Length: 189
Image 1: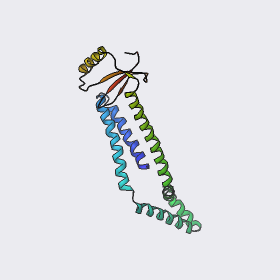
Image 2: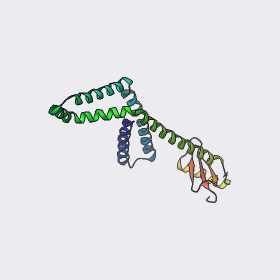
Image 3: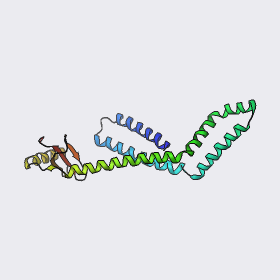
Image 4: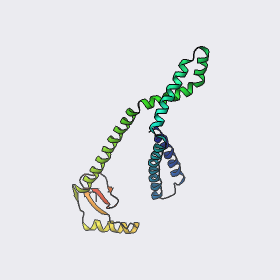
């Protein structure tokens, strides 16, 4: 989880700089860059997980941290203070690792609950879009469709785009990729 955070931040920064550099390129190119960066985030998370995670590594880290902690406590007097100051950063890192490993089930469960919440939100958005496409829509007259077809031809768009008036939208909305439609609020056309 932590690796995916820094990797995602790094990829986002690279994407932001890339978009600033190619500012004069088309929106389609910038969109392709953004989609590529999202795929790169996904792939890098999977690769990192497969390379980093193994149950043996987790057990070793817990034993290593416990050994260092026991070793430092076993020392006495000035020698122990010297060892502690020498290994304080190393001890802190290992202590953090052991703390993280101890509570990893809670961290993963918290992350999973967040994933579920955002997944339900995403599914709710898809259902709302489905509702917009099918409920309270009116087909406008032939004149509006002929104007839309002329605009499509002049823009070089070969897909069939349908237009409707909707009682559910307040601003014009374009929905869909394979079967695109444009929804206008009632009376706006």
